[in-house]
Length: 222
Image 1 (tube, rainbow, N blue to C red):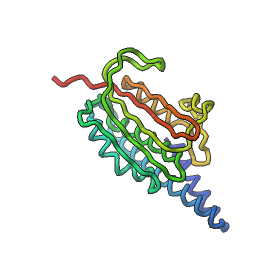
Image 2: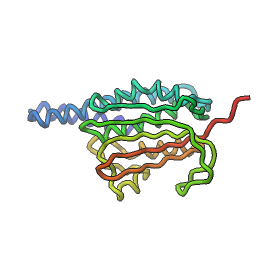
Image 3: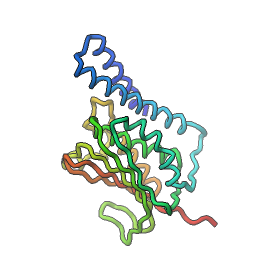
């Protein structure tokens, strides 16, 4: 995370140098957009670091995903920027999940940041959550049972097949210019697996991207 913050600061510093040297109006617009995005992402990540650093032990809790997603909306709009139309579709009877709340927020913010990067000129993002039952394990290694399914669907540039096969590889990124280290999706995958879930990504170049995160239903309270 420290490296991610350093890279975001590097984007801002590089932009300032270019502005001081007299960037043309078109270049200036791109620089300012990139700097604003870097500032938003750095601010979001600093909040996560502060939250993750409180206390030596992180305790799993039964979390209402409906509440967590609604609480995330304001932060999501800050991450996505004014050019992205955000819509949420959250089932009213959404099951609880058994996770560390700060880890959940960190994973969701990572996914939102990726969606924002895929839509530099703006677009639409849908965050959808509903209950689902899987009768059998999936080909990707997902277990059977009751799950909450979270979908994050963007209208961005999409992902080419050769890139899609590598999105979870550590340090793999196509967005070095935005200060990305290639660890964001890997961290989301690690989070999902740590709590018994899984994450897959569906995309076609030029047709946007759908990230599907499954988290198992928490056991009923006694």
